[in-house]
Length: 190
Image 1 (cartoon, rainbow, N blue to C red):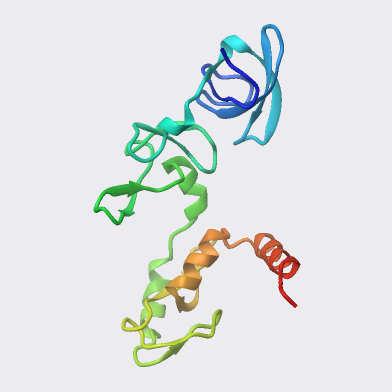
Image 2 (cartoon, helix red, strand yellow):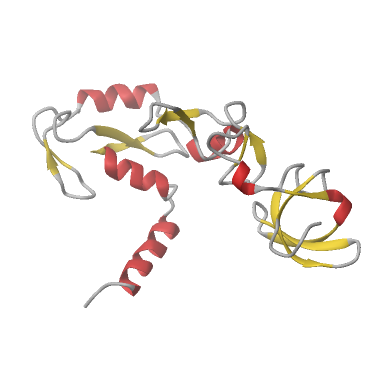
């Protein structure tokens, strides 16, 4: 029996919602439920026969299925998600975003001509990251990476890998970074 606040998956396509779209129940009626589908950020009224209960604690790491953190569709781990890294226990882990969503996240790869140009300018002795201003010895006290525009494939410049990861976490999106600044200012201690 599905209840309010239960997580559910769609078991058949409905309008623009894909099969296995994940949502949570906001209201139950006799034969229908109001479900907020996370990936589409929309609430719809749907027949109870088109959804089934999802035990979300049985998804993700060490389970066969996981929920993509972008589209919020339940997909098969290691099949629909690329391997990302090895965890502290030596187990392979997969990316939080499915292969399909990674296409838009990753965008265009760095152009080979840009890679050649940037490698000719690679800092070798001393480096100051243009974002965090941290001084480092390349390859010894920090790893440097070529930052690039994911829309064009053009190189920007060399930055430390920490800043590159930070930009990637914010999807190179200026509005997201501005929201992060507002957030930090809101909670900044005087």
